[in-house]
Image (cartoon, rainbow, N blue to C red):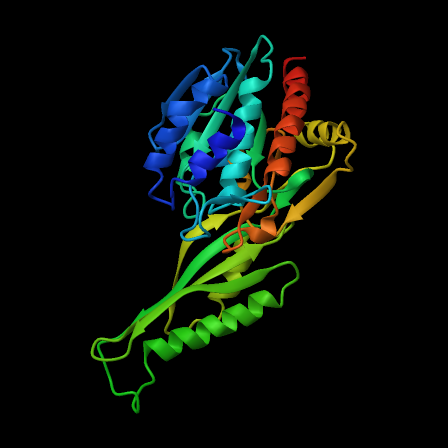
Length: 340
């Protein structure tokens, strides 16, 4: 099996969040072909592969799950089409292939994690936090392009406005559906007016006959330098007759351009006569969740993130293969610094 066959095989297995088992089994079956010595499924369903036995850990984390849907899997004009090629099976496979090929110095362990649930609750990364020990560097696989390194991601506050009553005629009381919509609209406007923040409706539902109820879920993105607490305070202001519950709160996170991992990846990119791009991403990823590890970290992987979650999702094979070579050099620099 070669790197392209690994990626295509994984993309051909649908793996929406909470339905990753077959895709994980495929990785367990095939990672040994790429140099990984010990491969297991952990308690959350993550694929975990290890090389080396040293106490200093370099962790490589990507995610197996995708959003549903996507274009038919096919190879066309040097591009592999299919859900997950960009977000993020391409970056995941690039980490797996490069991590399996690089020399592991004495005193170092490489740990590869194909995480589950990143597109929903990040349960895979959250579980990894409970057992990852001695991590000296972390590289997360997400699409940055073969010449890009992401150094920051916004945080996320997922909150739900909800209300209910025992029923009434709309001419007497407008009801929970209207109350929740009005309060949610005010919150969207207030948050969206704040610099660096964004807010979108992620879900809404309601019943206006009999026992009336309504829910509106808001997805708030929080910029570096602020916090989810700031967003929570704005959402909570003036919500008369409407309750709020927080479903997820992930703080923004960023590292400097001189971070060990970022520095190593910039050096690797330059070795291919490319000019490194440092990216500040608008979304949220498992880098945010794993930030409590407190180690140098960065994000790298092939693909154009503008194609995430679209029916045009596709990955240039040339970009994928080049990213593997960049990662091999970058990981060589990282492991050398970790054991030095």
